[in-house]
Length: 125
Image (tube, rainbow, N blue to C red; front, side):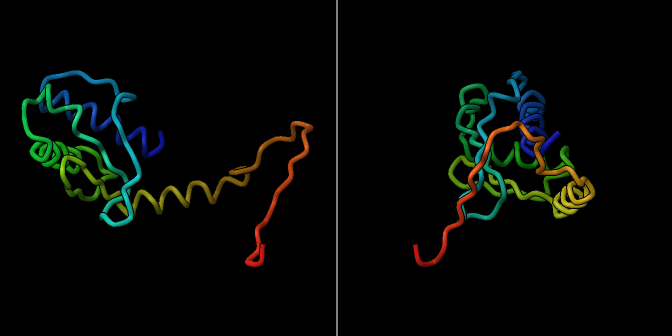
């Protein structure tokens, strides 16, 4: 399971635990965190406001606290205007790199008979 699936599954379980509402993991909106904010991935909590009957900031705090406690891959969080920014633990990234480094076939696709052109840009294009 990749990190996106882990986060979505955790959010789905968190919403069910905290608010008693079932939500499918694939319905969780997850984006990369914008560069000006701390975090790796951002969960949009606005869709949960109706079921939780709380403000987005409160939902973000509650859900973030749940995720830090329940999902070992999540190190910390911060909430900015209804967006829950998650920081992934360095141990996850280290194990990810170690796992993929050991796989000699990572990034290699079998030949399918089609030609591929790879274009490299230069500073003087």
